[in-house]
Amino acid sequence: MPSPATKPDARIGVRGAGKSYGNLEVFRNINLEVGDAEIVAIVGPSGCGKTTLLRCIDGLIPLSSGEIAVEGERVDHPLPGVAMVFQHFGLFPWKTVSANVAYGLRLAGASKAEIAERVPYFIKLVGLAGFENAFPYQLSGGMQQRCGLARALAIEPRVLLMDEPFAAVDAQTREILQFELIRIWEMRPTTMVFVTHSIEEAVLMGHRIVVLKGWPSSVHEIVEVDLPHPRGRSTLAHPRFAALREHVWSTLMDEAKAAELELQT
Image (tube, rainbow, N blue to C red; front, side, top):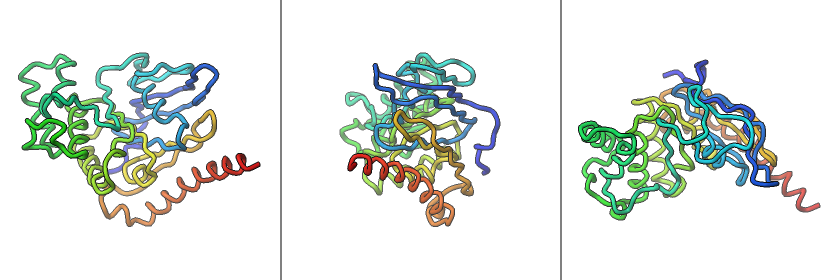
């Protein structure tokens, strides 16, 4: 499957976006377009505003300047069809897997028949069949994240936003979930934007990588990930994977070294 990064139609448009908290300017003049069914990873140093930008795209936090639009509709509040997967699962501990997955559908006003049809399908899609009646405390971290992902996917979002979606699980589970999400995207392509501190994850999953740098931060570079599709474990051994990882790593490390030297002088 070719990368959708080449598609000209934009699902998300970010124009001149800036965010400040009083005198603290987090990021400024961010411009970005995300295409239909494109996966975009956002990387950058800690504190550069990656999560803040993601929450602005979701409508949870207002911009200080500029604008964000989803399919031409300006984002000034959470929009229908835009789903967020949080780092720490965000499940209701008193609800079962089925009830957690159904939550977004109920908020959207789906009928009982629609919920009864969709919930089992998406539970199976993320590999949780057989755990429909389990509560979050009975699930491993990876299974809880699968449940959160199923809840987001169940509303069939036009945009899926993910904030460090696999950071709270162990390395082995993280790798499994990365490949699971790739598999799900190949079955049901949708526009995804995710924040990560893992350069390997960004290269493996992204069609493009947005590198934020500076203080306040801005878009330093947008890296095209020209790796073949579909992606799997063999992708990790591809020479181009190593080259892209090194390029992004070097870009970020240059800033880290410059900051360290500034502190020492």
